[in-house]
Amino acid sequence: MVTLEALYLAFQASNGVSTDTRNIPPDSMFFALKGPKFDGNDYVHEALKIGAKFAVSDNPNIVPHPNILVVDDVLQSLQALAGLHRAHYRAPVLGITGTNGKTTSKELISVVLAKKYVIHCTKGNLNNHIGVPLTILNAPNDADFWIIEMGANHAGEIKDLCEIAQPNEGYITNVGKAHLEGFGDEKTVLSTKLALYQNVIKNNGILYYNTENIALLPFITGYHKIKSFNTENIPFITKISSENLTIRIDINYQGKSFRVNSHLFGQFNATNIIAAIFIGLTHEISIEHCIEAIEGYIPTNMRSQILPFLTDKKLFWMRTMRIQAA
Image 1 (cartoon, rainbow, N blue to C red):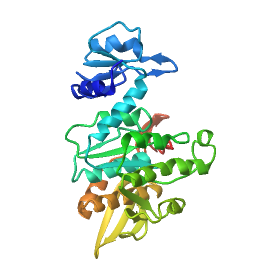
Image 2: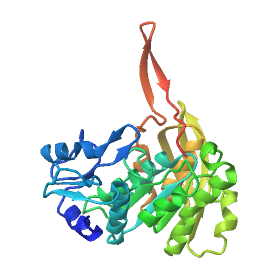
Image 3: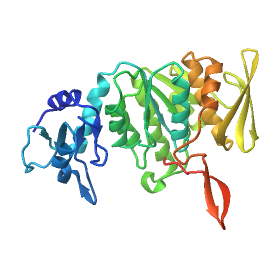
Image 4: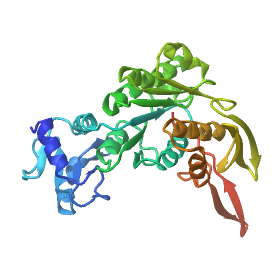
């Protein structure tokens, strides 16, 4: 069995990681994960043939190959490797979780912070026990800000993801009733999400707190690095309205008036927009650049998109509203 240190040396000599033989970047490291209906160990040699530089397997009986690295458990090795790689990264890592709005918030915050930083963020909604390690291990070397989305469908999952990602900034979008079949009750949802703030506090990092989420307040009161905002007047005065279904926000900031014309639907997205602008301002990005980023963002990933569809040979437009995973 190879050690974690040997695995990391192989990773450093590779071009990212993959878990799917349908998408093997040249010279990448393939991790043979298992699922209910598949076993990645069956594809290890194929992965090497089609471009992987190394393959990680937990099948002790696999046909030997100098570039096959055998471990006790592939998933645990993937997570441990991501944790080790994170430990070598010294720039900011922003963790985002919440019952709703994680992915949209992540996208908006990313485009805003990209006005100043080289951003690496979660692709799509790959925010679970596999997606978070993959996000970390596929970060480009020149990225100087990571944004990691974290989702959960059972108790304790955010704590586990934080142990890997070790965020030094954190934002919880909200806490509500979702995935109760896994959590049991709303109290467990709250405690699971709070693990993000608790980990950031442990790392002496920055908490972004929407004061409308009053359930979170008792758990962070007294901490000295809280950046608070809401949809009304912190740190700017806003007026929210709709224009052709999309959200428009008028902002009064430092004595000047600004207007944000977004491509997003629904009053709930106003909070996501304001959070992104607030976090941008916290990182000394000008209000003008924050607004430019928001206005340039076109929703994707089946969130607040307008999609065409045909019925009775007529073209209609459909507004898509996807219920996001907790």
